[in-house]
Image 1 (tube, one colour):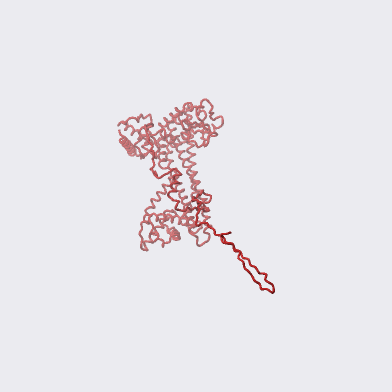
Image 2: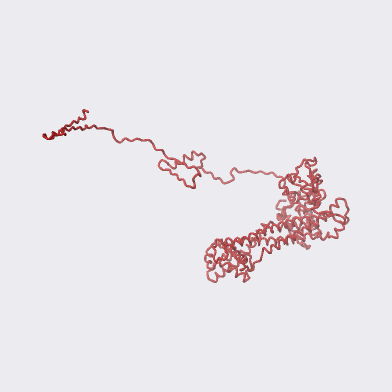
Length: 626
């Protein structure tokens, strides 16, 4: 049979089981039916062989067994499976819850937003109608009051007109569709911030609920409700555990079905696990609300200081604060939505525990528990606390394994324990008995998994043959498939997937493939090639090319240094040094001229009787004779 044919057969089987259950007055989901088919096939007592093709008789047998189990009204195991299916299909992470809520809100707002962005208003009446639609969109998106309340609409219109008067509609109409949507979102946040601030000042706030006060009442009430439910569930689980311990100790419990007690204990422990998940989310809500309240008070105070009694304030100062105020209020709305979802899940889980509580009322359990001390988990852990109760890794029984202790292991309490922290020995040895473990005794690391135990003796006994006890737990999970989810054994049972992932029902009878031949090839360059042909790694070659391109012989090189680039990097300037050159422009020559010498005689005169007669004698010698 081909894969497609097998999937078609399985889908037909699931459909036929669902129809038969519906004809008998029991509506079941296909997810629940698919898991039940897997569980029936896995149970060794049903003698199904996944290695061969199902015959017609096998199919009829499978359908009959599934219908019988799905219609069993007194089966705590079926209630546990239903509870697991419901929780996995309805619970998700905090961020996923909020993302889905925002997606649904946007999808509901989309027709209103589209009507605004697609509008082609021209006349005055059309523009006024468009403006009213924008006010309605702002109110619907903010969640502050009803668009049908006249007082709320008037207050929102006044706030919108202060930031977006009707005269701006012409500019708004000229924007693109995406810009219009962006502006509507921004206007919504600003108007929301204005209305919240007015409410704080006592000048408005029509139709706005006091979400911080509501949450301050709802969160503690929800926490108390979840904690009360946990204590009730644990008290019931402690009774079932005591009964099973008495049975394994050899006491006869006439008229008591140990199988039902065991299934009821599993149901209680699964309910406890889901309740603790919800409690953790509620505590996160409380912390988030406290943080939002502090931020809201600080933002309001800052706005008061910014605005005070001023008649006009720059928009650049107040608009961002209004937007932040709206974001904080949106956080309160998210916490309200999340708390409502968690409360609905909490209420929906209770019917899945009603079956075993009706079967084992206080009057029924009381006659079997008379004289017995019902221990709580804390008492069991306390009984095995103390240095003498811890594993000694040097003992020969356990020395061959790796043991982890709080004193020697960093982040010890963050270890991922197998079987959700239940004792690994009692699960296998005492047929699916769920006993809480005490990790302080010592955690065994075996094949990359961590196992914790309820006592030192249990740890030593498990260490004698870990593989056998692990196999016993797996066999027990086949008989009680609800343990696969509770103990997180999906890795051991590849055909059983979490319910939220099991929507493809056609693969459940396939035997898991644990080995296969495979090959892989890695491309040399798996990224797009981008080879630069002109790339050069040699620095000197790059310099040579640079000099060639710049042609320094015909150009002047300049260098500039600024204050910002000073001391940042080395700057180098290259110039041609001046050469020593000589130029001759004339011939050296000399001329010689005679030195003039003149002698004057007779200057003293001839006295009174004779006249003065000066004689000039030229004594100059010719230049050639010198």
